[in-house]
Amino acid sequence: MMNPSRPKKKVLITGATGYIGRRLIERLLFRQDVSLRLMVRNKAKVSSSVRISAEVVEGDTFSREKLARAVFGIDCAYYLIHSMGAKGDFEELDRISAENFRDACIEAGVKRIIYLGGLGVRHTASRHLLSRIETGEILAACPEKIQTVWFRAGVIIGSGSASFEIIRNLVQKLPVMITPRWVATKTQPIAVDDVLSYLVAGCDLGFKKDLVVDIGCGPMSFADMLAEAAREMGLRRIIIPVPVLSPKISSYWLLLFTPVPFRVASALVEGLKSETVIQNDNAARFFPDIKPMSYGQAVGRAVHDIEYHQVVSRWCDSSAGEVCDINHANVMADAILRDRRSKNFGLIPAENIYRAICSLGGDEGWSGYNFLWRLRGFIDKILGGYGLNRGRRDSLELRVGDALDFWKVVDLKPDRRILLFAQMKLPGKAWLEFDIQGQTLVQSALFYPKGVWGRLYWYLLLPFHNLVFGDLIKKIIVRAADIK
Image (cartoon, rainbow, N blue to C red; front, side, top):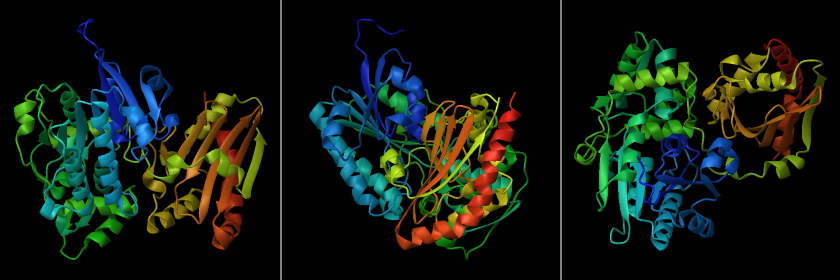
């Protein structure tokens, strides 16, 4: 029970709309001894229930002014920012971000930074893992001014994690798997629930010096993980390693059979080329009450969460760059190419129309011309995009920031409007808007072309637009009429 005379600990979570951040919020939000603040790029991606109970600051670690506001008065700050799948010189961006955050925390008198990085050693680490190691080193570079508790995890297993999505899709889709040599590399997976337990315990830790804590269950190869996941799912799978599959070919292989795009697949494959195993026993020494569950238990829990619609977050929740930064209202107003259709839905309740739109995508598909949607998704995957098989977090519910196949949900107004932003590879920017106006559903596909190629792309696809968009609005109304 909280001592009423004791002030609450003020805690900041960065990366609060990401895979780990969303789940950490659930762990800390209703603790009586914690006052929670979130730093996000887009407030709309934070649910209204969370905004009521936690302070939300909009900004990022590249704005010193907004960063100073975020860390002001904070006792413990979680750094959950990383660059998996980012374009360009992500290493330099990671360095700047970490330095800015550390310096702002020191200036504000923050007592502790908690960072979640990856297992691995410098001389064998991939570019992404090396960047995670450097981030930890930067955050911990001033031990005389601020304490850093640096947790290092390998493959995180949980509903919606990138690693588990890859494992689950491969096991479900391929009875026989021809695998590259790197599937024999050892790692130490860990359940996402155990990661969260360590992160929460890190906030309460009585130890006052810098600490690196490697976490995970027993060592396993990726092949072992595939075989064990198959057993947990009640499937029999044959795994045949071959020496000829290069990391790049392996990334394309994952591209075809899993929902992750090429950049994420490539980063994961590069990370699996070298061993990522625990280098210290600090987890047992400093957190003896946490007993990590086995890999099989972690897989079973992840499958249960998916089956019972309890997926709190997914790997693609927090998208870097333009998706979060675009002022969609302004850019949409400049969209010069449009496909707008409207249809009266009569006496069907508007909430049924909204629910029918919310159920689009994933296993339900998009329309009677699903094969055309799947073809576009396949082309997108080949080009390095997300593709259609990214699916969705939940089969019934949408929230701002959710992935919906190769779309991203950027605006929701219950029973009135849904706006999707295209994350497929395009020569321009595209949106799909559903607007319920009285007893009329207005469906608009909007496109802001980039140069001549953008315009050519739009006009070449017009015959297909007439098929898929014309059918889509009809199917929504038919589906809404069947909702009881």
